[in-house]
Length: 267
Image 1 (tube, rainbow, N blue to C red):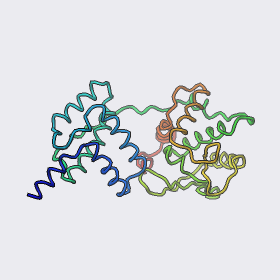
Image 2 (cartoon, rainbow, N blue to C red; image 1 turned 90 degrees about the vertical axis):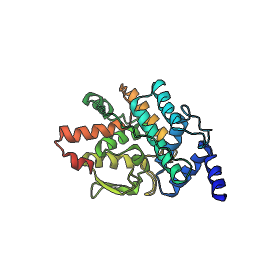
Image 3 (cartoon, rainbow, N blue to C red; image 1 turned 180 degrees about the horizontal axis):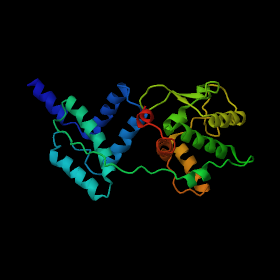
Image 4 (cartoon, one colour; image 1 turned 30 degrees about the vertical axis):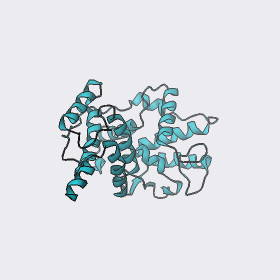
């Protein structure tokens, strides 16, 4: 009788009440801050297509199907729906483990798309060195773009690099903040080493300071970096403003222009 009462209390939990517990559990397991942020952003969008105030007792498979139908009807792309449902599948899996539901959501695979890159003409515009009397932020953004094209790293990685992570003698940089959580040591070409040496003369700072800070010396937020690069690109006459496109461009350059190996690139 007691077990039946506990079960009833559990399934009467609302979806919106279970979600913070799911996030807390994921955080305790060591899920990255970026993934946690994605969980919050996606559940906000998912809430437009399913009533999160309903209880697990009321939640039925038809509700999940109607959620996907609503997403399609709203004009969301196939890959956006796949991304949202992937998060909701993970949430439901945790809920099943907690005894809140026995429902699951089918996996919707991303559609293969052609990865857009910056053209050589656009790169020539972006890589043209700023004038000596330019503001620090413009100069910093130019160095960041050079760095992204030289290393192929993610925006979250470049935001977290500190001055001490550079080793000019060995022509390499240490990535301590990566998507996989593993520390990586990446080579830097001679030109990039020269650019960074000159940049640090102007930038100054202590070894523990961020390499690419805000004008106040703090770590740039994801939004601040995105806005800074977008403003820089548009000022140079380049309409594309995605930071991640530099990563795709790095891959294209390595594979096509340099005859690189796909397995080496993946590693």
